[in-house]
Amino acid sequence: MAKEHQAAAWSDPAEKKKSKRHGLIIVNTGDGKGKTTAALGTAVRAVGAGMKVCIVQFIKGSWDYGELHAAEKLGIEIHPMGKGFTWEPKKFGEDQKAARAAWEMCKEKALSGAYDLVVFDEINYVLDYGFISVEEVVDFLRKKDPKLHLILTGRNAKEEIIEIADLVTEMREIKHPFQKGILAQKGIEY
Ligand code: ATP
Ligand code: MG
Image 1 (cartoon, rainbow, N blue to C red):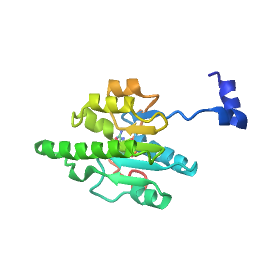
Image 2 (image 1 turned 90 degrees about the horizontal axis):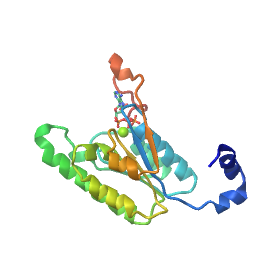
Image 3 (image 1 turned 45 degrees about the horizontal axis):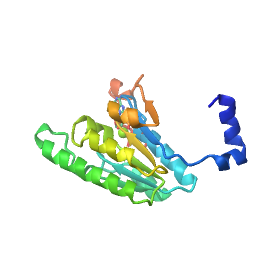
Image 4 (image 1 turned 90 degrees about the vertical axis):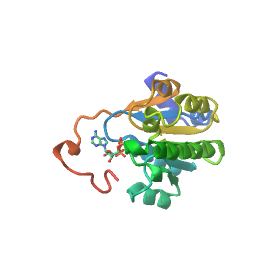
């Protein structure tokens, strides 16, 4: 769509009514900061628009962090499923089990019909590690409710995921305070 047409569609209420809901598959990937926080920003926008939102987190779960409490205040359902995650090579089996449990939760929530937007936070990580099968996820995405919006986050998004997505953004690191030895800041990073 040309830019001027797009602007007209946004401002004209009649055009707005005509525009049909198209559930998007959105991917936030790349090595720069902002993948999860962009998903949270979209979640806030969606809730503000009267939508129901659910976030399933593959890695987070065993510590306290800002979005848990913010979600509660905003009426966003959030499931930290990463309690079993260790990142220790010896505990590969446990990480795989935690990832599978999170994936089961993603499917359940996406299939429930109760949400307008579901976020699979850090799913790209566990796909990259081979903890869940990319074919299974792509197959699920292909058959999803056409009205449901989904956001998949995490570094190293698989080619197959990028291909099936409607919107893919790559965060690129230019600078990160970590390079200067500055540790993660409360409210900014967790
Ligand atoms: P955020 O949750 O802040 O949006 P993210 O989802 O893009 O970050 P992840 O790859 O999930 O980033 O990593 C989570 C943690 O790692 C965050 O605390 C984030 O600040 C930090 N991080 C992200 N990118 C970098 C980087 N390039 N160098 C060092 N730390 C990073
Ligand atoms: Mg993240």
